[in-house]
Length: 241
Image (cartoon, rainbow, N blue to C red; front, side, top):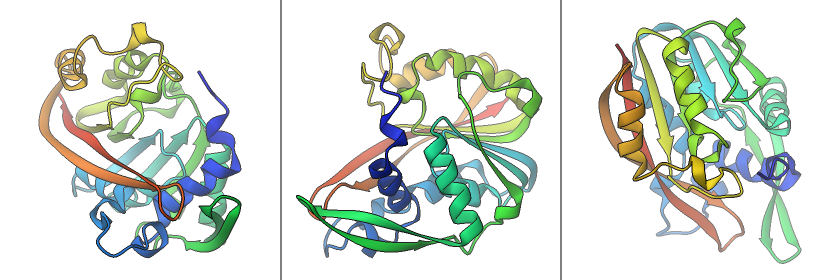
């Protein structure tokens, strides 16, 4: 598994742009897939609108979804394995803006200033480094859990799924989003789902959770001014029995 890719300045800047950039910041082309911009906010809204005590954003990257969760939760724990991502999220929360580098082409770059969301409450969010496969018991339990584009980046994704029943309060909701891009550089092939990801999730989750919704959310990551990753994440919403 490559642990270092998400610690690089290049990836930090790409993900800050992915999470906090406007359609003009990220895309900048008329007729492009602008509906795919703003994924971290959109996917977080699948947790629902009911007010709750605690929410967990696991695999939070640079933290935009955590702001959306803070609209409905009194406390949000925002965890990512990448220390560089966590530090970038905390810096933006404190300084209210951050300037990132965008690659145009070749060695040509420019800069764009990204701003802290006006919605949500950063005082409710705790940004911390951690491993989704080993979530400590001391963090307690949660009413809402979001894991966006996480499970297909874990070496042992079943460890995370097995932790959910003890992590989520009765009646609580879990949102799992995944583009199902299983890669050997992150997950050993023997830990891939045996069939399709959705069927595997239904099998692993059904004992303790009820599947409430299946849907899809596109997302867009800018690589250069002319090259983008357009991907569709499979979203499932689960209620703790």
